Length: 280
Image (cartoon, rainbow, N blue to C red; front, side, top):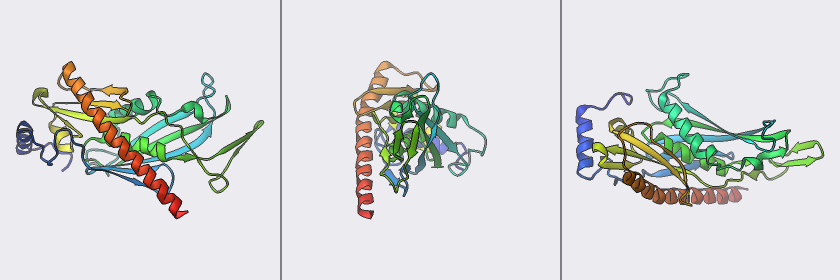
């Protein structure tokens, strides 16, 4: 069973491989698994496959009234769903600690880092603003849900288009996709999460841990960066303590990985845009 603890042989084999400078899936310590991005027919629907971990993100929008203390700001909300489809360890209607952790990390990475221009979502100050909702569904859990969910969320936001709006006096007209071309969201930067798992009292660290590596790890840390080398968030929930030098080393590795993933996201978006033009 996928939710069962690893056997003693599995644990010892994994630790012995790491001690010898190897990972059981053949990757190097700082290698991500193969990343695949698949776009749906609608704007804002993206499936991310990171190795055998699969995550689906879907963006939707609606017009609502803003908060009175922030009359010109729209909303960005995230909803995560971990179901038995992803792993037998999850139950319907019961929120696990892992789901809470993933939700908080995505919240920090996206909303608190101001990745989306929420003021650009204003239609009529104090009256109408756009509320953007990102639903994240975990389809298959083979480790590192955080990084896969982060990639899915930001890619879906970049791919999404909201309906165009015309404001004349107090009258607001929301145009359909057939009437006018939809409008992309204003994204300030692209935050990408990079998760590290630590073994052998912190002497070994790996990027993008698999499900088995997560079960055996002694601790982990997630660093969220963008291509401008700005730290958007840093999360370390328990585990072994870390030295400053280790955190700096993780940051240097994350800078390289974030640049690679961002380039892959942008290339996938450009290819999808060309495909849409060809279909039209």
